[in-house]
Length: 184
Image (cartoon, rainbow, N blue to C red; front, side, top):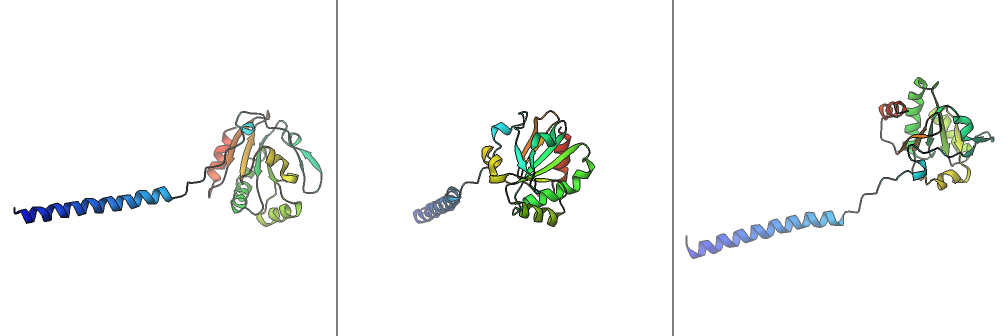
């Protein structure tokens, strides 16, 4: 091989190495520029599985004051914290509506919303929700226990202990709902 051919070969190899480096660098740079993924919200430690569910007072949509422990005393219960403007909340509430009749004699299903009674009643009517949705007036409970993601579900066993705590919703959770109900 002549000297000219060797120089051409080395130049070509150097160009390939530089080209690969530039391409690889553009992928690395793109990954570094990508915004961080948001972390999934976490349940307040006071609402962790195995802890006692704190007593709380809510308003019924018809105006009466209701203590949570009066509704759940000696019964298994599921609380769904939701918002009427949250599509995943509506989907989850509809799935609970469909699955819950199979378990209704064993569990109490209760929704909780920080919105006005008129919006909650419209939401329940639109989605065919027959379980009670209580009002967390001024979002006091939600703020105190940092429930800032909708929907959030809490399962409470007969002795008042939290059996499960779940945040969020993914489509078609009927099997997940059955699994959660089977956990306590």
